[in-house]
Length: 127
Image (cartoon, rainbow, N blue to C red; front, side):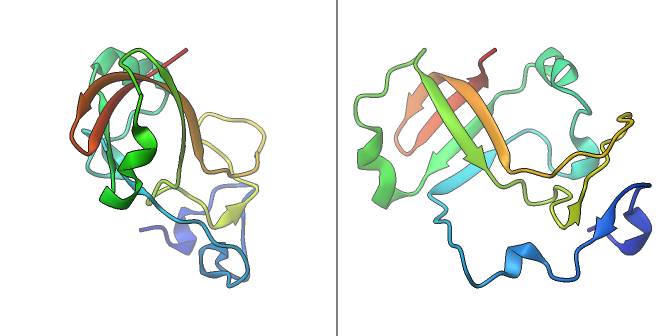
């Protein structure tokens, strides 16, 4: 995981970890499985990710599956995710190859539904 030595120029570590805040709450309704098992395996940009052609699988927990009724392959989905090994605890954030720092945000994507399995929805990034 990240340490103080991982801080890039322009980044400042928060005094408090925002993930441990007691004020706001999100309810995770499932998980996203990808071919990348560690942050080091992840492609550095979306073009490389598309070239690899490895889809993600979104697994929805049983209590939330009824909300997926009526979804069809090809339909677009908005996916909001919290990437477990992303650099969320620093603001502003400097991405590799980026000149100016920017604010960190959760993962947000428009995905095209490509397959339906009980409890799973396979997606591919929609442009």
